[in-house]
Every structure is written in structure tokens, then in C-alpha cells.
Length: 471
Ligand code: TYD
Ligand code: MG
Image (cartoon, rainbow, N blue to C red; front, side):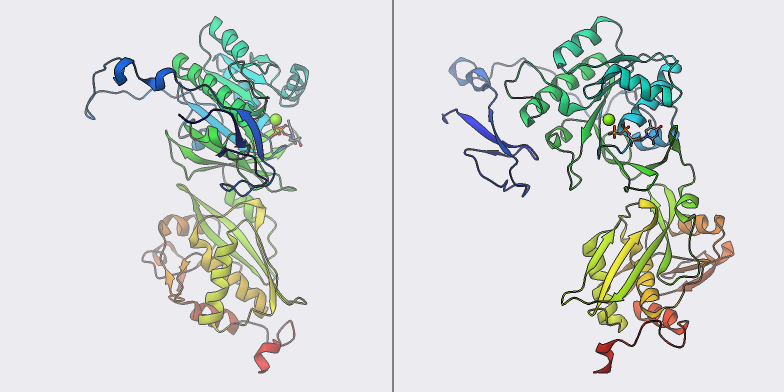
């Protein structure tokens, strides 16, 4: 049997090492490995005398059979319910992650307040703030009168004992899981072992009592839910709450959901009186567009079942550096590198002497490859100085050959664009757009896109001719 001694566990991802090292091989983080005492092994390795399994024998079931879906508890916030898949499932556990200050406590206080007002038993346990601070927030949100049961506690055994005294609550919020500790584990609070142990105990309580449990988790700088990445495997749903600093928009996104879709988003706006739901995000993301500047293209995207129009902004400027800069906010940098390479190879553009900046307006993070065409249009527009038509939307995936591929749900994208007053669609060939009163510019190849935009460029380029072109 292996010698049992202290284990060295990465506090970021939970990887276990025999001895200390400076950098975690699993997640690449530095100085995250700390010594923790390992949990005791199962007595007898889970086997009885004679090496025979000593478990209880149970009957196996078939896939076919009766099982009724438990009624969901709706929070009363449509955007939150959309992301959870139609409300909280009794006995399920949600992990909600986000940067500090993004509004996790605000969102959950609002959800708790609304549920409590609707007559459900709701318990909010804060491990980070005193009861007075939570009250102050509730006051600001106008939810002081809601009969939410509050506590500022961090010991899991105490919390479970208290919750078990009366009827199981419909919803329990633990804010945050990193502050919780259990007496079952020796490690210091905040370590992976503690977080895992605390989460296990709380999850067991949720499963046995039928309460829906929400765990709040903090996020590290690269967007992972810190420490409790180990918890992600144990919960039913992982939801992230995102937003760009300086923007009031907040996007709730399911990353994993055993009881619902993972591609839906909920959009909120942080106001002076809490989070306001945004039912029509496109109008919000497109507000304040500068229609006369080159470098902006409207992308008709999909977030789950909902079309979302968003402005993609590009700035292509001659570089003063040996290696030009590529900076991206809200999109995948490697996808940008690919679009740039395709534009150079198949579109005849010279971008190697230019810095490229790309931004998705409003703080939204676009994940679809369908944004390729809008990104390409914004880039070409910025490079040539040609302003794109204000009433055009773009979508399509660019292949490495330069061909533009159709994407899913083009009908819904076109319809949303029509609703918001757009009259032109630039996309790979699609069937019924014309019938909706939209002008369709079918664009099968990036070379055509480049030619079409360059044709509308002002006679003199806004910036001097590209030095590379002279050769
Ligand atoms: P909070 O919910 O405490 O964030 P988290 O729990 O994710 O750390 O939100 C904190 C921020 O939200 C803080 O900067 C103040 C702001 N805020 C508002 O703008 N309006 C409000 O009504 C509330 C309650 C907070
Ligand atoms: Mg908080």
C-alpha cells in the first residue's frame, strides 16, 4: 500500500502531487500548490473479509418506466429562469461563478426576495458579509419586507443542523462556498479539501431534503471558478455571471446544466436599484451606434434560442512595432488570427504591418463561429475606410479556403434583424430572406466581401498607402 503522508494539492484545479512544486502541471498556475492532509482511506478499501464486496444488494432498473418531472420553482426573474431551464429543480445544486463585484450577491438577494414574497421558505447564508450588510443591500433593492431567513455563518455542520430543524426550504443560498468550512476535514478554510468537503456535505443535504441549493463561487483571473473547480463536477449546473468592467450589462450563462440548455443567456443591467432584466438585448447592445465610422459591423448572432444583434468594432492601424499587436475583447483571439490569415491569403489584404483591435460592443462575449463574417467585414471596413451600410447585418462562418459557410438558424437571425429595422443581410446564400422584405447579399467567398466593401471606399484612402503594397 502506498505510504500515506501529506498531499500537495493545487488550489486552483485540485490536481494532487506527491511533493511540492512551484507550478501546477495540470493548469499551469504558479504558486497554487499547498500542503493538505489527505482524507482517510475507506476502511478495508471498501471490501469485507476475504476480499468479497460487502455492500447491500439492490435491484437494477430499466430505462423504460415511470418518472415524473419534479415541479420547478420559478424565481420570478424571467432571465434567471431562462438560464436555469425554467426554474429551480428541487434537490438540485447550482454553482454560480463570477468576478468579485459583478453582482452575484445582488442577483441572488433579488431572487430570494421574490421567492420569499411568493410564499416559499428561502434561506440566505452569507459567509462574507454580516447580516447588517445583507440587510442594507436588501433595503437598496426594495426587498426589506420579503420574509427571507438570513444568517452570517461559515460552519457547514451548524448550517445543516439549523436548516434541518424546520421544513426543508425551497431555496438555500450559500454565499460563498470558499468561505465555508467543515469540521470533518482538517485543512484550513478556503483550501480545495475544505471547499470540496463543505460542498459535499451541503449537496448531500440538498439531495436528501429536496431543497434547491445555490453555491456562489469566486472566479480567478482566467475565468475559472477558483478552488471549487473540483465542485463543478459535483453540482447539477454551473452558471457564470459575466460583464465587462465599466459596462452596466451583465450576462448570465449556463456552462453545464443537467436540467436545461447550456446555450441560453440571461441579460441584466446593473442599476442603482439592483439588476434590471433586459428582455430585448439587441436593442441595448446596438444603442449608441456610430453609423458614420468605418470599422463597425452588426452581427446577427444567436444565444441559445434567442437571436441577439451586436456590434463588432475593429480598428486596423499601421503598427510602430516589429510584431503587430492583436487585441481582442469579447471574442476568441485564435479565431481572429484565423480570419486575418484568410483575409490575407484569399482576400488579398495586407495586414501584417497593422495592429488589429477587435471589440464586441456592450461587453457581450460572442462564442459563435458565425461571427467570422461580421468580424471580417469590420476589419475590411476599418482598413479601407469604407463605412458599412447602417442597415446591414452580417453572419456566416469563414472556412480556411475563404469560402463562407451557412450557419444554423439563419431564419431567426434574419427575422430579428428585420424587427430591429435592418433591411440588408450579408450572409452565405440563404433561401427565404427576400420574402421577409430583406435585401440579401449572398457572399459565397471572402474575396467577394472584400471587393464589395472596397468598392465603396472613399477615393483616397484615409490612411496612407500600405508600404507593403509598393513592393
Ligand atoms: P455584489 O452583488 O455585491 O457583487 P458580488 O456578490 O458578485 O461580489 O455587487 C456589488 C456591486 O454592484 C457593487 O459595485 C455595487 C453594485 N450595485 C449597484 O450598482 N446597484 C445595486 O442596487 C446594488 C445592490 C449593487
Ligand atoms: Mg458577494
